[in-house]
Image 1 (cartoon, rainbow, N blue to C red):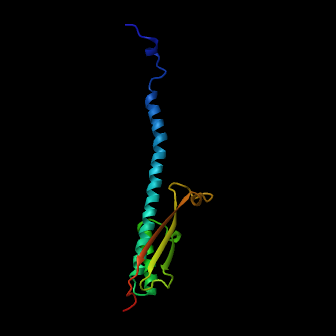
Image 2: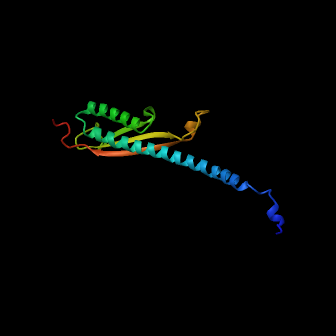
Image 3: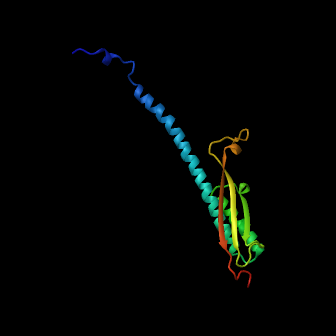
Length: 151
């Protein structure tokens, strides 16, 4: 049996696995990084939303203004720790509608939580971690009982 020249040329033999590995790595590494970045962003978004909701509820159910401040700080610290957020980077804004000292009977407490998420695997060199961080914001509102402070 005669072999053709194409079948005896072995210069291409064995390159398919190498090409598969190279292309696989070129596609897999960015995909894994994208999944890590999305997971980090989602975790911080859930943490900010949870912090806003729980702080608003804690303020609305507090017995007094001092108690509301103490409860808000404790809830924020706990939520930041649970979701792996940097508590010092979380900005908390509390207001009441209609404008009154917060909390007030019958008012609606509005809590805004803002933080920034540093992308994973970004080294803290030349301020890169600040440049490539993404803002995350969450808002929650909670109605204060109209009988608040009556006891």
